Image (tube, rainbow, N blue to C red; front, top):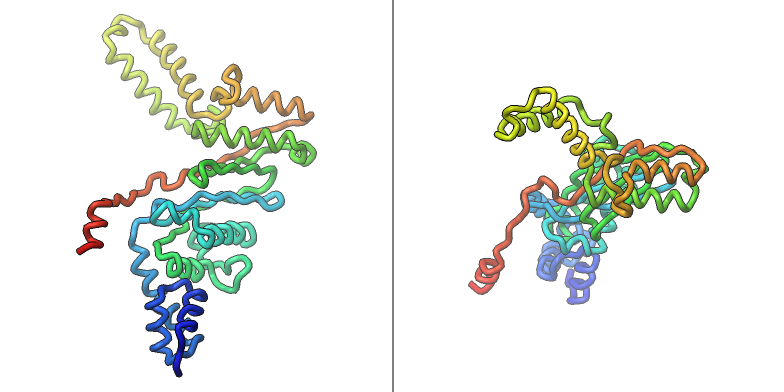
Length: 306
């Protein structure tokens, strides 16, 4: 069966594959468009497996709230350009919606779920996007909260924060609460606390910090003649300083350095006529802890002109 240049163009638009790949697929399929699509998908799945070994530390962090359920998710790709790709972002949104709808336990379970609004599994949809976009793509992690949830995404997907509050439905419904929640999420994005309050810091973490501080004091000649009880008081003071750095409620509030975040929460609760407590938070920073791909532009150009 013969095919025309228009057929090649149509197949390219249908699949997102290159012109030569489409031409070869139509030739192999003897002009049958449906068969050509199947051939490209088969080859695409094979190609996606090759791409799966490539470093993916870019991409985006994305947040979504539907009703009283919120999700923050990180999906990685090889370059930061992909985060501007509408098809990639639509895939990320689909993943977030699938988490809300299906409540998977982890990424492996999410991949096995049928993607929201489709008849494909998330894994099959992922492989299709790898084929079309041409980069390795990985769903790295997600977190889901239910209740009074507020999310914030900073820097076009560089940092994503989700906070869950314990409060009444009446307080959570107020516009002032939404603004307050965003302020707290922005604080977390900016200052990166590790815990909500001192009581949330594990005892072993505190003990390790005390041991380090004590050793530092002992190694300082100025403290050679100070009694043990004085050194303990100095360590205690420095531990409080440590809490001010790592505990959200103890941090100085970025919008008003004269008060702590805990005081801001207390003031807002009083103004809105109810109790408000920060129950949980999660902060994802794109690519944190991942190996980054290092591109050598000169080598890349040289390879193209050989």
